[in-house]
Amino acid sequence: MAKDYSRTQRIGDQMQRELASLIQREIKDPRLGLITITGVEVSRDLSHAKVFITVMGKDDDQDTVRENLRILNEASGFLRMQLGKAMKLRTVPQLHFNYDASVRRGVELASLIERAVAEDRKHGDGE
Image (tube, rainbow, N blue to C red):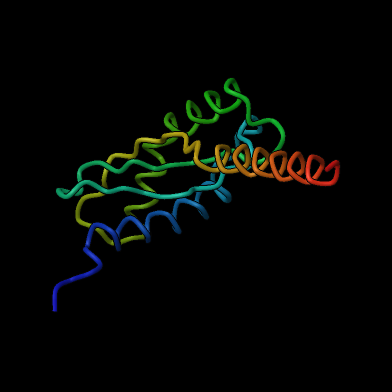
């Protein structure tokens, strides 16, 4: 039976859990918003990891997202060192933080669907 779950996926999942707790506990920057890590993609050679984040709350505009990404990318060396201690890897991938807009798109699509359903109801009642 073939492997359904590769080593890089397992490492990415563990990195996601570890980074979530590290960011919450160790990064003390007051400008940093409520961050959720939505996924981690690790390269096959384990040299790089793309960390996808969302910024929760009402203040998830572009400037806030950019500021949060800048803070996290500046702290990536520290986070990488902490990951090395926690994960027992020979080499810890370089961290690259990226914004995951899928949650925002999902909310926008849900509101569009709600609006369309409401319009259909309004037009259906008028006949």
